Amino acid sequence: MDMHTDAYSRYNGVKGVKGLLCYIHLYRAFVATLPKDAYDPKASKPEEAILWLNKLFKLEGELKNLSPDHKKKEHLIRKKQHLEDF
Image 1 (tube, helix red, strand yellow):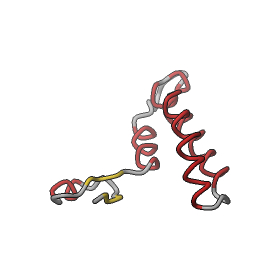
Image 2 (cartoon, helix red, strand yellow):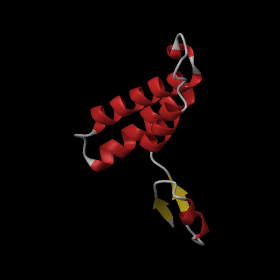
Image 3 (cartoon, one colour):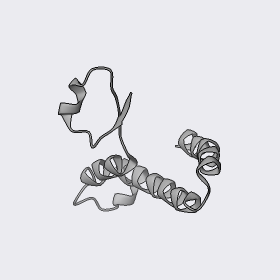
């Protein structure tokens, strides 16, 4: 069984359950690692990941009005390519 969680460590002990995380938690982790005093934070790896995730969120917005079946199909096609590009 899959369980979508917020990465709370207590969920790791639930037997027979595979944890799934959402992109917003990944996004927040990258934001937390941004250097506070860097001369050009856009050159940093966290910023690169944040920009990539923003593109993924934009894609989500483009797909939001599709039927569930069509949305799933588009997710598999478009997100797969986006993930491979990163």
